[in-house]
Length: 345
Image: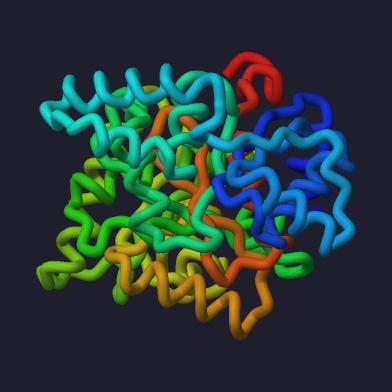
């Protein structure tokens, strides 16, 4: 069974409030309507109310069950503005009054403040803006997870038929944020991605640290980086008592295909059975997921932001309403206490 229907069922039992920064976008409106129809919680649409209503009318979309908020007219605007100014001051980034006000009128900043203050459970942005515009407020306002220094992103590939990963689901990172991660950053990326995979699937993450060679004796820098990252991730996972398996460096075929792993003489709990794939750099991660998306017809959901204390996703400007809905379901499920899903964890 694909991942998203499972997450929909969970959210029907544990509904969540998801704030969408681009409330008038047709894909957002369609995804929000599905959210309400399937009784998964409350979509919060930000933007000009008149424009949102006009867009919904053109699409014959019923807005019942959704919240519409214009940031500047919201009763929370002044409070969010003061909190944002204080937060930037604490970080040594003093803002001019007009500068802070202008930022808070941006739906990306307003939505992030809603997320930070618990007025929304998850955030979806990026439908009409660049990745940097969508991500900047999140990285400025939302705290990182404890013991995590690196915020990054992951993509979920979900296959209807193909038997790979966790029931056809693979978690790929980093595909959007850090161009040339260090070994230390890759360690954080691996653990953050694995924790989300564990939360969403209930399975033990099997993390493959990818490279162009498997278990090589070469000291080529990119191989050494993945080898070092593998060791760091194992130590950190053990220290934090995180239940996961990590192996590297591995070629992607050895990570996913048991026969290839056996042929290459690689015996581990990850080789041939990986459900989390960590790429050595942004080039390889981004190219890989887009190639699979275009040629294999896989469902792709993300970018899901990792390493932050609150769930958010930065979707592609080329995303469909289906993609938006899937990303929202993933982010929404992250907001469900794992103890409600799996008991004691």
